[in-house]
Image (cartoon, rainbow, N blue to C red; front, side, top):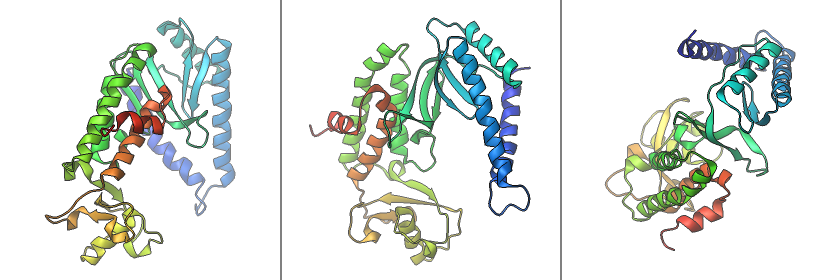
Length: 298
């Protein structure tokens, strides 16, 4: 059975399981009980622990784990060693297990609450094949401005050339130069509308928002212009002055822009630096370091 067939099957199963699992925990479900939802998570934890114990018994160190994946490491391990581990886990759990790939390097992003702990859904890594694996980064998010996605993509291409951790650290300087160049572009005032606009899906009708979030402000502006919006629709806006006392001055809906408009370069720089931190934090750079090392004015 080919990897492509298996991937298509697991994707289809994921669609079904995500929907049914979520419905088990839905408070207004017409059938099912919350205990069923809790039982699923209990079985999941037990199987994950069995996989962890099997890996550790084989001399592997567990780096990270989420619902359906394990990342393990063993000095000197070969592809055959990882395949053997997959077979051992499959034998113990009675679940089919495959080795997705072997990484040149991988970084699990630290939690904002406790930087010593990684978050389960944000990581970036590079397989030996040169293919990247990205989860939770702005480059994968529909609501991130294009300029942030471009910057992240360039940084990842630069880091992706590294074969080892030593080489990866050596590429940090180039990554910082990439961010510096994008900050200079923002500060120049020449950034294009395409680079800056942010897409957000509204969760309710414009008048139903309680707080003046940027999405709510932009939706309200469209409403005043006669645009009728329904929950689930996507709107586009630009940050014009994030700190403005008057809420209506903070953002502008793209559909209402005329020939005279400007953007808040500092606000976009903040988004840019946050996106850089996501990638570079595992290499020891915090937000303050990034700000100081990539500021074109210094």
